[in-house]
Amino acid sequence: MSRTPNDDRSDSMNPNNDAYWDSLDNHANQLNPNHDEYQGHDEEED
Image 1 (cartoon, rainbow, N blue to C red):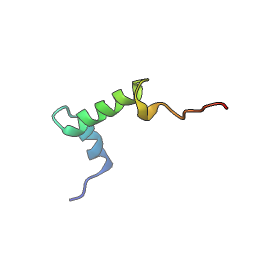
Image 2 (image 1 turned 30 degrees about the vertical axis):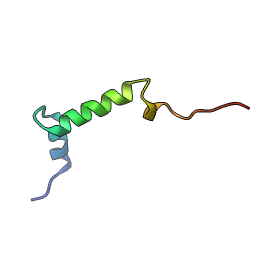
Image 3 (image 1 turned 135 degrees about the horizontal axis):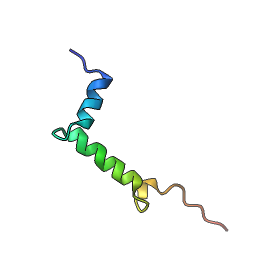
Image 4 (image 1 turned 60 degrees about the vertical axis):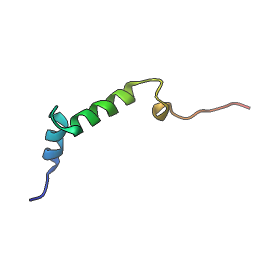
């Protein structure tokens, strides 16, 4: 039996599943203005 996109959503909404905590970590990282990965491009003027 294959998994559906709805199964993925169920996993990420279930606090007993690792996918739930992974999605929370990802969300927190994106909201963190100091996170290197989401800083955007560093533009230096000459």
